[in-house]
Image 1 (cartoon, rainbow, N blue to C red):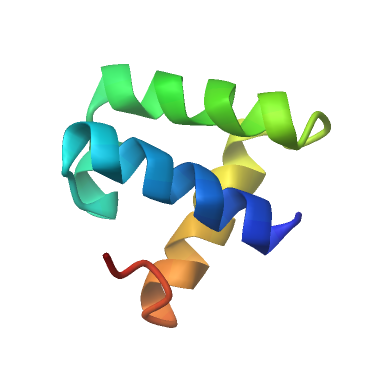
Image 2 (cartoon, rainbow, N blue to C red; image 1 turned 45 degrees about the vertical axis):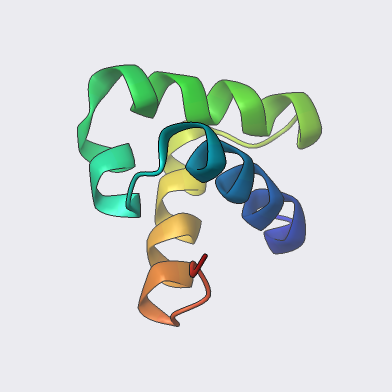
Length: 65
């Protein structure tokens, strides 16, 4: 998984919705939208891998504004 591309997608979604990663992972609409955005940039990324990578980045405090 390309973390830089995933981080770029996260920043784009965050600008649009001003939400935290926890809401993104729990809100069905945002949860569906995010993997679609990522898959346009990282074609072989699957939803589970995206979510785990995103959670890991959150834990490492890489998901700041």
